[in-house]
Length: 445
Ligand code: SF4
Image 1 (cartoon, rainbow, N blue to C red):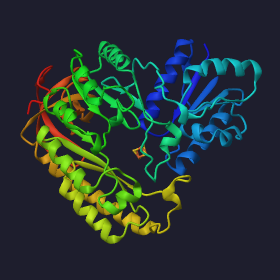
Image 2: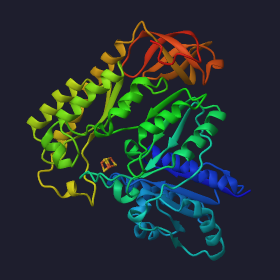
Image 3: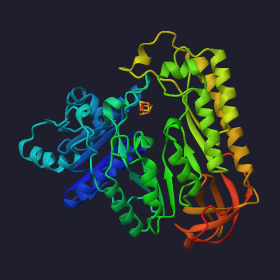
Image 4: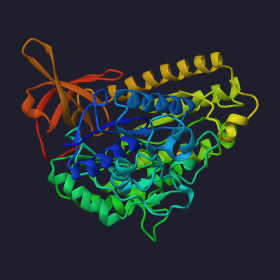
């Protein structure tokens, strides 16, 4: 039996794509082996979001070549899409295929086995208007299924290279999404995370069909208990979406809404499409539609031109929004983007200090959010178990509003939707007591 090994760098979308590529090999009779072992084919799914992503991708490609110089080394993903020449210059690379045409990967591998000639199969992705249809009927993790609904981005923020590696926004056909959702429910999944590069842009390229329409269709899928949107822009939350948040019992009370900066001048330089005032107003509408919602965000600190005063105003803004968690990143120059060429870059030391201040603020807000639920009962789908004392099994899982909850209970609870009363709040983990196992009342608080 031929063998294939994978290494994936970067975001959730890349991990999803790797699963899809594995399905193609599996159908051809391949077995999957560890990347650190000997394989006949190595697939490296690369990332280019930062300059470090490129470097790490090259390291992993070289590692694969060293493991088995006879193997076919295939490189895909974002770095492959933007820099195929650089990758083909690495001795031992056989195939470079970007973020499209992955359904051709087996044909290329078979061809290379015959010819032993390297192949550059990368095409210009900016011309692509079709979503790449690939089947993913299961995941290593059994409780939460990822459902890719969208690829690409039209935004061209000044710090980001991703539109050049993923192309313009493309939506998956709703019929294909619903079909895959049914398959995944059949396979036993209860929670679905809708993913994409710019997930909230779903429908922008479809006639009269928006994300809200898809969410209502998913609401009707029996056996699907929870739907989470991986990320959505404030500007993409409209009346129709607010209505789904308000009325669909399957929608998780959790939204990840990137802010990136809390000052209008910085937002403008980033070419983000909202002001802090518009963003704030949207958060209020969301909270009216979905009380107790957990709002999480991404923030970039130390963007070129960010002064102390701008940072301070941003800090106060974030505090006023009252997030339940913030992912804080120091700005890092990405070659090829407009921001990398901007003058007034911020000192690394200043950046690190600002990052720390926002991490502290995030932790304060995380704890305050969790404390609101102590004494209440939440629905928790258990994902893994551990022992915290001899003979005492502890289950870990997430509530619909993304609190990680630990409680005492046996392994028979794995993958079940449990009703858990929260007894203690923590920054990253909360403690609770099992009240019962429920199929109903996910948002029963
Ligand atoms: S919205 Fe901006 S940050 Fe997000 S992928 Fe598009 S260009 Fe990059």
